[in-house]
Amino acid sequence: MNAIKSTLPHSGFELLAVLRRMGGSARNAQIAQVMGVSEETVRRLVKALAKSGMVERVHGGTFLRGGEDMPVYSGNLGQNPKEKSRIARAVVDLISDGMTVFVNVGSTTTFVSERLRIRQNLLIVTNSVSAAQVLAGHNSNKVFLAGGEILHSERGAFGSATEGYARQFTYDMAILGVDALSAEHGFTLQNPTEADLSRVVCGQANDVVIAADSSKFGARAPMVACTPSDVSTLVTDTTPPHKLAQALSDWGVGLRVALKREAYS
Image (cartoon, rainbow, N blue to C red; front, side, top):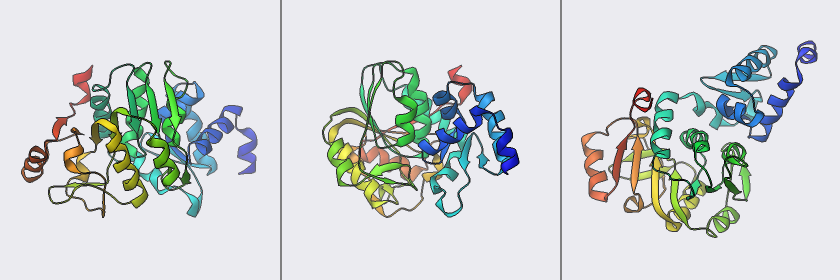
């Protein structure tokens, strides 16, 4: 491995540094944006780094090799990327230049963060290290990273300090991911501190948009993310089953099914 390291270009070590700053894993599009290079350059560098055993590749993303210290979140970057990309495009269509927006930690909201770079003069509050990294200093957007305890597995900050920081703002829109969605239990999460933060943000937002792909339909998670009636819109990739669709209607939640990519061309 040392021999391979000695042949890596400077940009290879820069890519490794970017991954460390972003919590150990990132989409290749994010890495390219932070480094100021093309995605093809990133893919070429990642291929060399993967041969050295320093990184592993998932569909559209890369994460540092780190054994037990590896963020479990990194695995989600490669799951349903086409669907998440469609959802991100549909979410960002709801956002206008100059809005104040909260974006939380999550694989789908990672795609949303990338897409938000097309907007200008946003004020963005986030607890996501990677979202802040990608959006800060771009298109006159202002980014505020909500401080608190960094959870390595989630690549973001949580806890009372994070919640207190989030309460300092009012949001035109909060964009949140969830781990599960069902007619019986509504929008739910696995992490109790993430659920606490979601409920705080919902109380500060004019509109709450849940970005979740269809793999979340009928899944189970123990923590209530928000009161269903607090949610303005669910953006997803396919029409929910009848029972869930009826529940969304009863809660007053709008449904936006993301179109396939070709429809955006």
